[in-house]
Image (cartoon, rainbow, N blue to C red):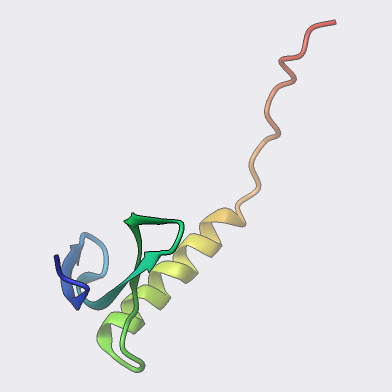
Length: 73
């Protein structure tokens, strides 16, 4: 089991991402771990993730109609 390393991913919009990862064991259950991915500061991967984050934020700002009321009385 690798506890640290770099994961190479390809995203269809922003391309290749090199994301260092680290795992942290959870004290309550040693069979479970918390896995974190981070982008190196000022790297192309950080730029790509920032672009995806801004794109997602802009898409969430779109006005959508309210869901129809499905409650019955």
